[in-house]
Amino acid sequence: MSPYIKNDVLLDTYLTGSKLRTNVYNMGQGKRILAQGSHVTKADLLASNGIVHVIDRVIYPVPSLSIPLILTFDKDLNNLGYLVYQANLISKFSEQSFTFFAPSNEAIAKIPAQEYNNLLMNFTELTCTVYSGALSDGQKLKSLQGETLQIETNSAGM
Image (cartoon, rainbow, N blue to C red; front, side):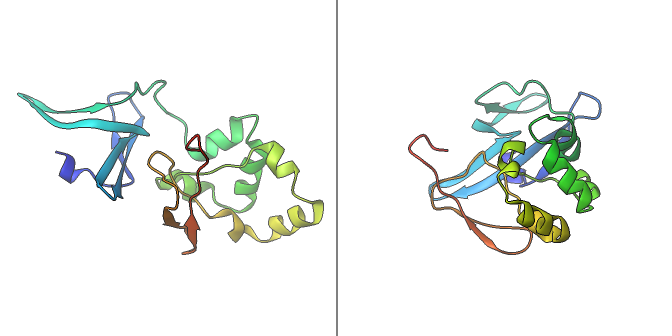
């Protein structure tokens, strides 16, 4: 039942080795539940052999790669994959459930050379993470380092 769905939980699916992430966000008008980033639009439909939760989109393809593998194999993110590797964060991002705002290779290329070299020497800068499905303008979140992040959206909600 929806009251028992927890935030940042990875649930087993019928697809071997695949996990489905649930997130719960307390909004002003109640809570919002997400399953792999899909909004639960109707919850707790009782069936004779279980419970059905209706979501707003098809989850396809079913995610099967971990964050470190995505950062390694995606041609637009592999520079960040290298930084995560250099920071010795591979196991942390493999073992836990995270949302990751990942700068593209193009964004990383805009970092001045000296600042990039400093980043390679100061890996704590790489540990700020969060999930986007229920973010709202002005929302405040905590980073892994305990810092407050304020979300700002544009007119398109992004």
